Image (cartoon, rainbow, N blue to C red; front, side, top):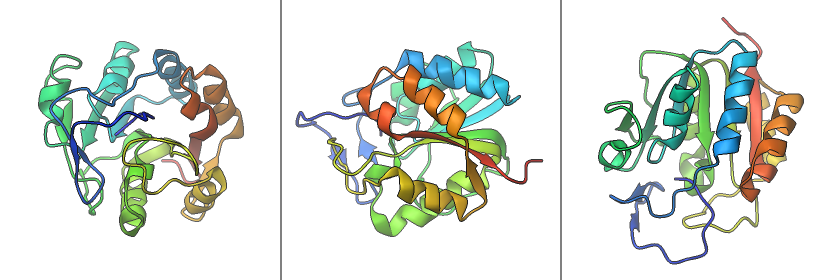
Length: 203
């Protein structure tokens, strides 16, 4: 559920915002951003990472290559098959992100890149709750801003809106890490949207 593309995509989008596709069409990967995310995570002493809205698993693969224990989930029913040639089999699975779920594990950091803007507003709080429920230390979130073009963008939000949402739940924006990632990103939308949040009560 990532990317900014003005072309007409040849796949379906369900009522909860998930892309239903057995191809890589529409997905984008920013290698330099992935490396920078790895640097932030290492600085924070993180080891376990979950990517919620992982698409075909490029960031899961990239983080695994950097030495992290990473896995991912996405609402696309074809997640396992489209990720099979990218990341170790079984690390990326299908999961509906807009209903409450509990994986019975909390990861050091939750990653969610260009996902929230695809989720209809009535499911927004459920999605955010799922992100927070599964994090021990913090979250790295990119949420498409108002006016950002892209396939299936139904809920773009300005940074301040997301910051208010997250801080109301006890998360604290890390300005330094957020700016670092924005400066390292090569895809334009990340330069405007990616943010790092730390949880005020880490354990």
